[in-house]
Image (cartoon, rainbow over all chains, first blue to last red; front, top):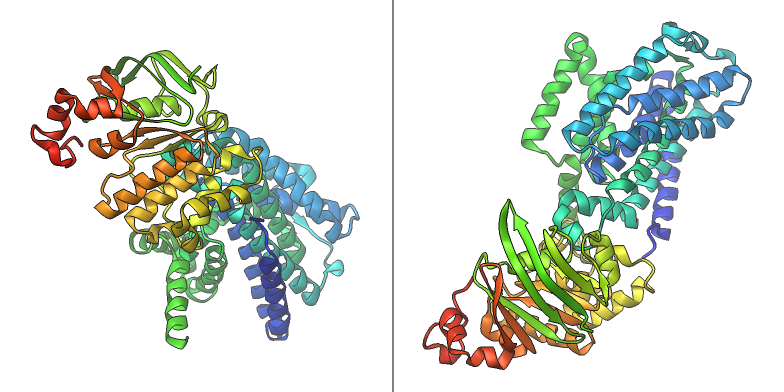
Length: 313
Length: 247
């Protein structure tokens, strides 16, 4: 009953090999390189959000606060002369610390109360960040352009981070704690009757969410080389995570991956032409999903795969 | 000293008294049936034992220790597992995941794999369905999964709430066979059951609840022969052993 099987590691290695194979295609020009980076970042962010949002059913609209902490930690350390790779553990740890600091009290709330609290925390963080002069204030930080890691290294880094996030998600899903959280979300009474009492352990999972979200922020800083509070602590970012996971399939391991891709596609190719009503269009999409396909694309895709397998075999 | 001793237990539900001072006991390795009409307080009694509802007053002792106010996790740890009414398994999880959750509170009590094998031996149907989503099981299999989940906690006492409700007669037979097997394996069972005849046939002793009080008690056979019990739960002419209308 190990929660992390050899099969997972093999699948992870396979995914990395596949990503290495398509790398020449995606690294063909700066635009496609950037798309790949954004995709890896989105997968990382959506998988992280899903740990608490999907498995424990606690919807956070405040993950930008963790993303921003990661982005700033990496940027400030890099500007102080630390190699960007070495800043990443610090970014993850600081984001995890900050996540636990506000997750501890907020996770005592459930449902809409938790969601509202997370908005408050994230907005407060954004406003404070705008006024910290040591961190560049509202104009943000520009990173040493001449030290850019280059598209190949950034691609490899992103691929490793994204695959690692999915593996972590699979491990949590199968772990004792993950099962307990899902059990509690699905049927609190049956959970109580079986002696499953994990409400407090949500904080543990939230720390993992926060660390991964901080890593995403760190990665973002490393590939954009320019961060401002309005972007990295922005409410748009927090909402986009909720959307990705809902589109893909909340509470599943592969849903966030799927959603991250779908979201990127919509954002780049459909909504870019609707810049002014960007948020309104996303709002409409959200309503559409919740009404018509509340479980997202992943279960449908799984259905399709089963159907094809039946036909073939 | 009995395994479970309940003394003068009073529980309110929504401000209304549901148990008005209930006293009874369950010995090691015995099946005790709790009978009574709807709303008599059977489920409330089970819920008070596993801390799903708090008693107003009274004492619940298990293995000599008071467990009043202990969290449901502690209660499971102490050795009481609950098979709730309507099975309440997690349909979106596999059978094995459901079973693993039954062992959640008892991490320190030996190997979960050994327990899983013991459960599969008792309920071979579950072994066949191990990797399937529990939501795809039949009604009888779901009940078995709920029983298996409770047994994963290696309990000394199993609380069972209407385990045969809504099942076909053949499956009901399996459920009662399983209960007897569980007793043979050394686990006591406190059984709430609408199938009064079947319950009294396998129970060493039984208590009849009415309006939150125990109004009758005795061995299973005594109560089966008791004219008032026959009239209340089996109908006047229930010599053929058809189940009563109590729900």
